[in-house]
Length: 101
Image 1 (cartoon, rainbow, N blue to C red):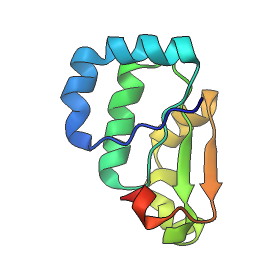
Image 2: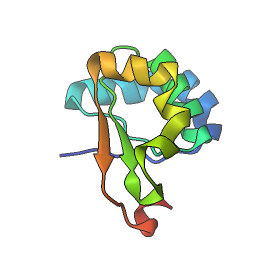
Image 3: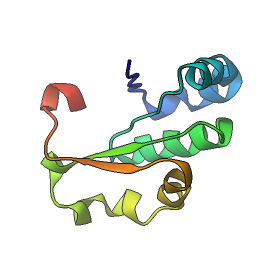
Image 4: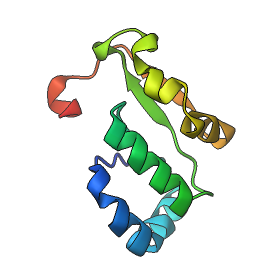
């Protein structure tokens, strides 16, 4: 089973306050957190990393939006360095708009 969580950055407070419930489930299921490339996702990723430092995280770049260079916000971030200590950065040739939205 794969778990994909699509959450807006405004969930930052609830993730910090109630994240222990999600953390327990993620550790038990040994699953990952997947995000898109937008600023709000990176902000939530940072919050997630602070709340769940021991959960493997994989970031998926949707190449529908352009070449890898278009992901400079993530590519040049400390979040990427942190992700790649225990997880991976993955590239998809294209993910349908309905999935991204």
